[in-house]
Amino acid sequence: MPDDTRRPKLLITAGPTHEPIDAVRYIANRSSGRVGIALADAGARRGWDITLMLGPVAREPLHTHIRPLRFTTAADLRDLLREHAPTCDALVMAAAVADFMPRSPDLSGKMTRTGGMKSLELVPTPDLLAEVVSGRRPGQIIVGFALEPADRMLESAREKLRRKAADAIVANPLGTLDADTIDATIVPAIGPEEHLGPLDKAAFAERLLDWIEAHRSPPGCADRA
Ligand code: CTP
Image (tube, rainbow, N blue to C red; front, top):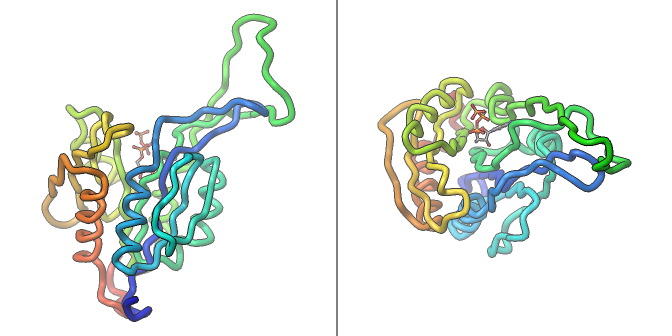
């Protein structure tokens, strides 16, 4: 195990969020959490200090030296990030946070079919990545993801990079969600874009950790950001 003062502290979020509609139903997406889990396993194999915040998926990391934290909703994830993000060296926001949540879920009851058509009022979830960036500590590296239709993938990733002020956005096409491979491009705030794919998710994880390692401030240096 490497010297603790040089061991990067990496925080990863992965998987979908579930936003309740009523006591039994929710809004979700098809994220499997596989990319984030692969990153956590790859980081743990390197001896990094890994915290994995994982949404409601059945899959789990293989490596035992990973601190697992579970979330269900975007609000749960926000609470976890407020507690743990300030102390990490690098954050990878691979979680597929729901963009919208029902305005007033009835958590004690169940919407019935009687009465015909119903509509659901949705409100945007808070932008967790932008929140972490705005409260960042000097020296932290913050990487987000953007899952987009292939024809406007890079353009959207560049726009998200500017809007969220992260250090990099990993752009990947919609098909990545339940595929074994990822055809990713790292779109950084500074430096050239790097096309990494198509790779299996474990190989991609190694390449993204290499990128983080290369862009990380040396220990004790607080002049980034
Ligand atoms: N993200 C977040 N909080 C949200 C939504 C997204 O932190 N409420 C993060 C994701 O984890 C990802 C990045 O932001 O790292 C991009 O997510 P995406 O859903 O593509 O971006 P949005 O902000 O939702 O933008 P848009 O609705 O325009 O696609």
